[in-house]
Length: 416
Image 1 (cartoon, rainbow, N blue to C red):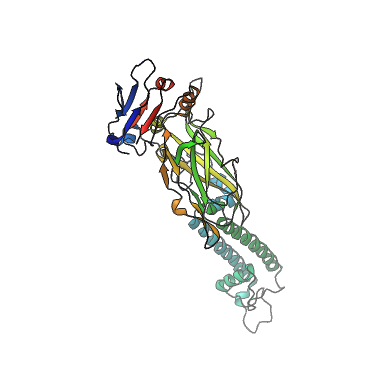
Image 2: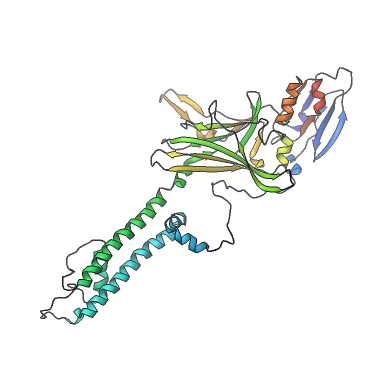
């Protein structure tokens, strides 16, 4: 909608014959004008960037779902991580996990190879010749290389048959038992780490999609914030639940400033609660009511606010039975006012299937939406007045607002 072509029609003047007052927002300034004729809004370029002069803070939750949080000045940090070695190895990057995997086995082979080599050295097996009648502790092991190969064969029960322990040395029998038990424990631990890393719920979240933008529009007569969530896989997320929080600064009655206060939002899909029957992409709705942190926020306020909308999808993966949590976040610049999602589900008669067109997943269309806050909208309706309707300021080159007191005495309509 071009600003130079936008006419705001004043269909009915006040009953006393006075002229209504219109406020045209331009470059962060307000000009009150009295017009007996339709008011033409002047063009305004780059409105969002001019109104919101403060630099937006970095995201707390990145688009990948990772938390942008670093921990500093922790006492005994390394020792605490080593006390929970299993979780540490699962959480670290793959290169560190594989390094520990290889080093653990190689070191265990070398340690027991050294023990076997010491046993045959003390017993004098290295000096035995072919004509000797004394039986060695281990057959066909005469040097460290042979001891190393025997260590590998023993720990992993390979059993080639050339190197065999005898009953000549009781200490060798004891070491054999210890290495067999150690090998089983080490293998179970390391294989468990790799398996847990491969089946982490985080990998399942890679196929969970969130819409690029959240939207604010009218739904059933109420301003609502909506966003989409979808799953690329055919296997279901069982018991899927959706949550949303707004993280922003809050000042208490005592003057304490809480920089990252978490406001829990009431969200759901269609007529259900936060529990989802997640068989196709769902449109999640938060109704902007008096309990909502967006209730007093108008379209202009949204541009100047600093907050982060964080959404969570939790559930159990059908294929593995593990619990997963997918995360995404929206900044105020990611929220479009006066938009609605395009439909992406249609029935294909040729295949007799319902088809999900993911090309439409992020597509939106502009719809007529009040620019006022949800609180003002309720007050206008309580006075049986119609609030100003126009397009989303995210795509408009101007914003035109009428003073609230006018709406109790007049009807307002926007002529495209």
